[in-house]
Image (cartoon, rainbow, N blue to C red; front, side, top):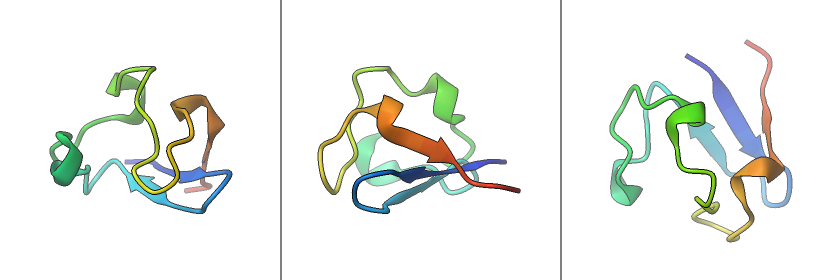
Length: 54
């Protein structure tokens, strides 16, 4: 599973962990999150995240 980092604040979305607090159970792929989703820490849009190397 992949991890993605917010380019603005450094918050990390880990597909293996999901983000249950915001409605995404463990195993939710980043591409399956709606395009209008925003970083829970800084509010930047999904397209401002970068995939981290495996």
